[in-house]
Every structure is written in structure tokens, then in C-alpha cells.
Length: 176
Image 1 (cartoon, rainbow, N blue to C red):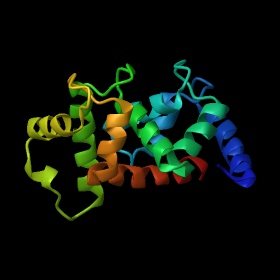
Image 2: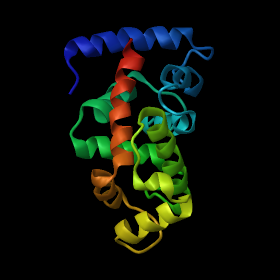
Image 3: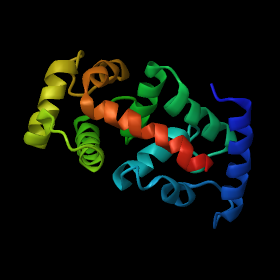
């Protein structure tokens, strides 16, 4: 949970950003410059959508405070669920092969931007990485990952954990 002082700071910042927005709303155009960099451009829209719970193309104060709490402060399962929403591009509740391709490409960029050490995924082609994820974690054998499948995969994935670490910075970027 967020501290009361954090909520007060966030509220001041939220109304300031909203007032400076061209549309008078906290929309994608307002959101992206705040977080990118360090959040890779390819993840910006997915991250915005994860905050925009009611899908009205802008983030209200409740969505920003709940989203920040879920992605930065919540228990691991909540933070993983938030990440799943970032990667579920078509918002159908599963990560399809296309969603997984976008996710892995973005996570590899995040890794390369933030780390110098090597991991096996850096040496494999995209199709092999996706095949491996699906073979090992697609419990329903339907060619996609459910939220539960994703959570099990992400616990052991260096790529997913690096993204979780990066999300901690989002709170600082938005509040400061």
C-alpha cells in the first residue's frame, strides 16, 4: 500500500500533469514522455493500458494510484498480474504467440539497456524462445499463456524479473 504522504504527492503531481496535458486528460500523450526512457517505447502503450482499467483512454486518479500500488508496492503476485496486463496487448486475458513475441522483444531490449551480463535468451532466436516458453509453461496446451502460466514462468525468468525491477522506477518518474 502507498503511504498517505505518497498519495498526497501523487495527487498534486497528477493534477499538475493533467492541467499541462493538451487534452486536459492524463492520456497516452501525457504518459509516454514521463516513463520513456527508461521504459522502452515498445512497452509504453501496454503500460498505459495496464493503468487504464476502464479502457476509456485516459487514466483517472484512482487508476494511477491503484496501478502504482500494484506495479511497485504490491506483493509479487499483484506485480506479476500488472505485468501480464502490460503484455496482453489485445486485452483478451491470455498471452498469445503474438503477445509473447512482443513481450520477449521488449524484455530483451530492457535487458540490453540495463544489464551487461549474458542470459541464454540473448543467444536464441525469437521463435525458439517463444516455443520454449510455450512448451514449458502452456499448461492448457492451447498455444497461449494464462495469467497463472505467466506467473509461474516469470518467477524463474531473468527477463521478467528485470522488468519488475524497472517498474519500481515508474513510481519515481511519475511522482517526481
